[in-house]
Image 1 (cartoon, helix red, strand yellow):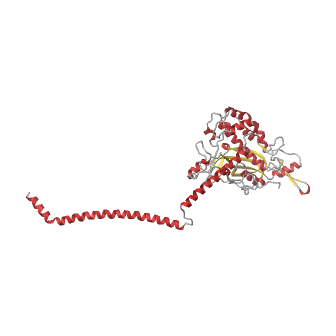
Image 2: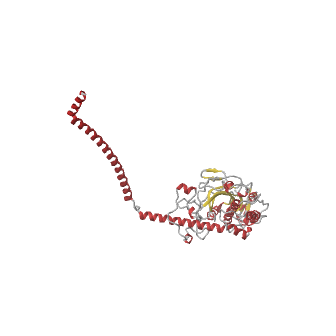
Image 3: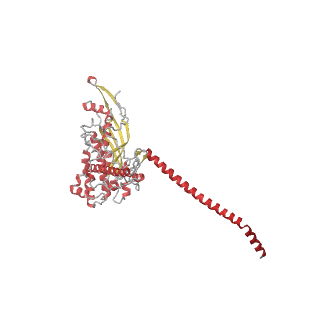
Length: 454
């Protein structure tokens, strides 16, 4: 107890200095805490001010700094562009639909019933059976497009094996399904578009010996095409077209490797089309033609009602077995050949022989690989969608579409009209539209040198 009293006396004697030291420690701690908080606030404020200053400098140096009015104007313009692109899509689809009717052999009643259905609606099995039974009767009309040469009458020769392969494409062992009928009809429209290209190239010519395209070696579409893309060789599935499957085939199998993406790579069963506005189908034409008329053929590819984007052109000189020069009157010269464009042989000299010989010196075998564009029915809410649209983050405009979009002026010239260049496929609201060769300046491939008499 005495010791405690001694201690209290000592503390009482020096309590001022002890209290002063304690207060100093507390004050220093409070000071450090406050200054640290102020430093953090200072750093935060400094960063904010620098960011705002940078933004102000950016705006100050812009010719037209954005503001609410500018933003609203951009949104309005964005909506207007969407409307114009959608209108172009409508026009292109309407033109394609008008130029690709269902075959008349089906009968008006059948065609009316099918066209009344939406693209996703099932076709009545009786109508599918009717299509199966009568579609073969349409092929004479199909072949008349190019004036198929038979028994030396007509303009264009066509390899019989390729003709047989095409017709087998539209034969089914059982009644085809709705999907098989729709895909078969799409195939038929594509074949007609390719034949129409050849027909238009031969416009104004009346015989095999002088027509620009004298022979069709092969016409291949869809999965039959071994397509060469920028990514390399992409082998198509050599299993034939939609008509070679049975009614038990699933839609996955029917559509597999039928179309390609923007790089020319075949799309598998689970792949999404890059553009919703149109499908891209690979095509291959192997022809024998006058090399001086290749530009005309390319222009017709661009002007087709189903535009064809040419991706690859390959020329091969025709090998002749023999050539014997013969001198004619007034310095004329000609040669007999054992192979002509039609595969016939000539034993005597005549006007026809001279024409065939002259033609043989300029003919080449040409192989064209490309993509044909098939427009889908327009849907305003689907504009700019598809795999590529999603990849680019395309969004629909905020402003609602006008009630009467179809009343606007055409945004693109009508294909085939006087003075109108071939329109590319509809742009997809900011997406890059596929390049289609212009009719005014078609690509000019390197021509094979003609082989004439020495």
